[in-house]
Structures are given as C-alpha cells and as structure tokens.
Length: 141
Image (cartoon, rainbow, N blue to C red; front, side, top):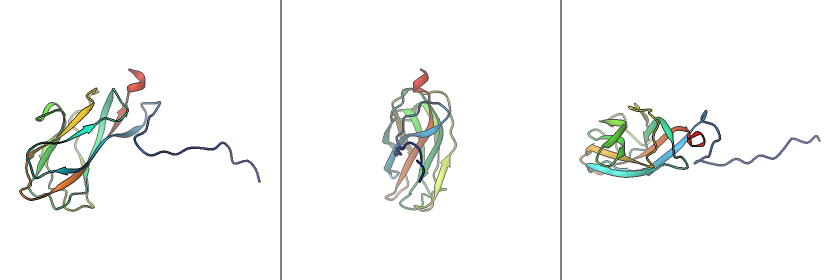
C-alpha cells in the first residue's frame, strides 16, 4: 500500500484563518430571550480584531415568532453600527427554520462585542439562536 500523504487535523469553529478569503464563524449566542425588550445577548467576537460581517443567521426558535423584532448592533441599546437592523422575526416559525438576515453594514468592524437588541417582545416565552459569520482581516491589520 502506498503512503496516503501527510496527516491532517480537522478542528471545529472558531477557526483561525491565515487569509481573508474565507468566511468563518465570528460569534454565536444560543437561547436568546425574545420575550423582553432591550439588549438580550452580548456576542463575543472570537479570535478577530478586524472583521466584516457577511451573514447573520437566526434559527432554532422555541416557538413561532409572530410578534418579535430584533437586530444586531456594535454598541448597547441598539447603538453604534446596525449590523442587522431591527426587523420582524416572523419568518422564524419553528425550531427547524433558518432565517438569514439582511446585513445592513458590511463595513470593517473592530468591536469585540455585538449586541442582540429586541425592539418588540414576543409576548410569550420565546428564544432563538444567533450565528454571525464574516471575513477575518486580523492578520492584515
């Protein structure tokens, strides 16, 4: 049998990349409360000091989110840059639905914390998960 080549290692997110050509997971929050207004989760940026958000995914809703509105911001109280503007979560009708949100700003960011701000509460117990993906420019800053 011939040598199959060098061994490789596979790891899970968060990843460190040596190139800005790869989109990777930048931050995640699970079990975000969407039944109370205001800042509900602070997402820590993983292993990046300079990045651009390309995709934001809301998923795993605990119930159909018929009334709730939420957005993703670089400062508390819906301040700083709106990465995702405060908008209806009505597309999240069950835990299996994945809603890719419209990214309002792809400008390069350095904030190490992003905030999920609920503008309108669901009106009953409800949670969701949030995943933030983007380009990591840290190795070039």
